[in-house]
Image 1 (cartoon, rainbow, N blue to C red):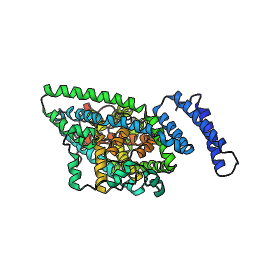
Image 2 (cartoon, one colour):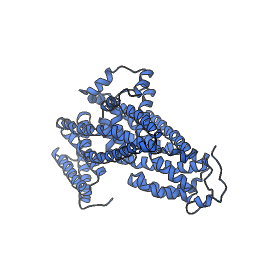
Image 3 (tube, helix red, strand yellow):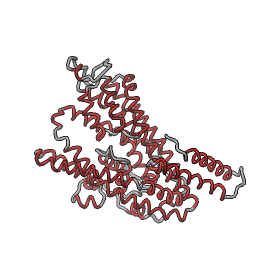
Image 4 (cartoon, one colour):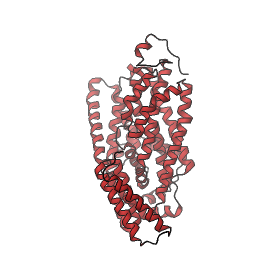
Length: 477
């Protein structure tokens, strides 16, 4: 991180403010209350100046979270009026999801209408992607139900529910039967589904529409596909614009939350962070490592090869930034270029293991924080909705936030826990992005082995030319 001229003063002031607050709170120093208060606001002013110079959206979100927490603690009554900022931001986010999901799914499915040319490798890859991401989903569910990271103290929860019409609606809503849940998946009117924010219905419509589009002739498919691609690109830019309002939305939401409930929900967010890292490690050890062993992937060489792209992904929180090096790394250990060229890019739409696990954690965290008990079946419906909705939007900044906010709203859950999650999203994003890259690198190696094209004991450049003269290295059974 590049330090600017405001960085050192801001950090020093932040440290001094924290020390004065702690010493005053525990009675070590007898200070007037205004002294630590003024020190904290002076430190925050320096942080704002630093953020203005850095021009990093992530940094602005962190600073806005600190400002919101301080405002909520110092001026609880006035801070609750700042909820309007998060409400406006939430409305903007809700406008994104339907056109974005529709366009990306149509492009992702109908755009691969020539999948027959790829043959069985494409089918194997998609089957592998769905199996592995489903395991990630279940590990996330198990972890969050085990730690109960979102569970709030009853007194805090009562304060959160006071005057909250969303929670009142949840409490009075009738329980749905299994038949009701299944019926609700399918849209009766797509315009109605979009207007009501029924994310899963939009997903189902988009998938069926894309399959139908893939079946028509190229002459008739091409115009609609180009329109969908244009819509997709426009929505990516639209998302960029909306995300500029994220610091205001987060600051307002945190101010409202702390003003109404104190700092307890922020401690729950820290517990969620630890749960995520633990669940991702469990996923690597319990799922990806056995898969690599079964597929006879050389573990040591694989780890050495992916070290650089995974480091890039972790540091930049961008899977796309690591893609070129990841593809080169897989070719260098014996995966043919044709396999890498298909599996890796496709994996960025259909094999986001870290993101899927994160979304399953975050969705149930929101329900736990809201005090809404969900049966295992209801949890599955919600997280499968998230998993389906996330397909194809890997390149969208803060895509997880957009998807999560829209989905919890469609399940009548309050949005304020999502804004708490967003405050620590940068720390979670590093880990889940790294796991996304590891998962896609392993997928290319596994599919190559499954196709009998993985070249063992290979060291060097792309293996396509070598493979033509080499016997298949074996199949995965």
